[in-house]
Length: 145
Image (cartoon, rainbow, N blue to C red; front, side, top):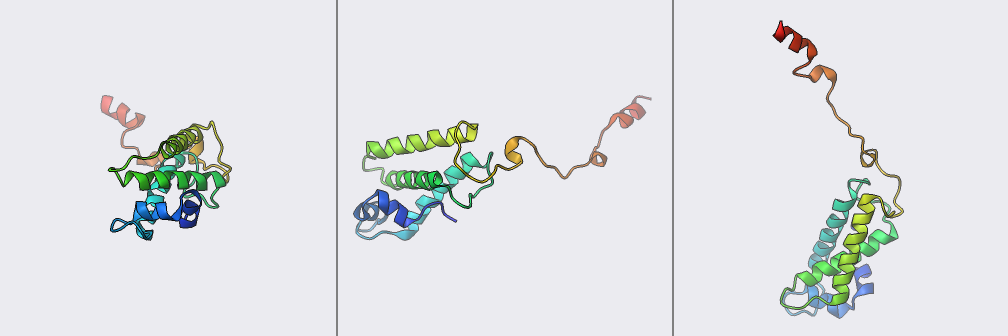
């Protein structure tokens, strides 16, 4: 499940601009596959920051995560065009999105998602038991005797 969709991006960018950024042939039609790839890349970036604190993908998607997904997807679309300059406001939105994700990861900001996972709180689960030990104190004592 994507955190944002084409309609969300078109609320932030004019349709003609989205077409220019996605259509590699003539820049007049939105290439949905390219747009979806940008959203997927943006969402993976979000998940990379959040997976240490939350179960991802987030469901339901908090409003702030949808906004971050849009901002990062727009960044991804602009960076597909290295021959053109990325607008300063897009650069600022990208930097702000990453800063917020770092703050969430560090616990300095909240996203309004459902409760955090046990793994997020520092506990780890394992399928190992004491009998799996290869070397223990009894074996050491036998070796030293």
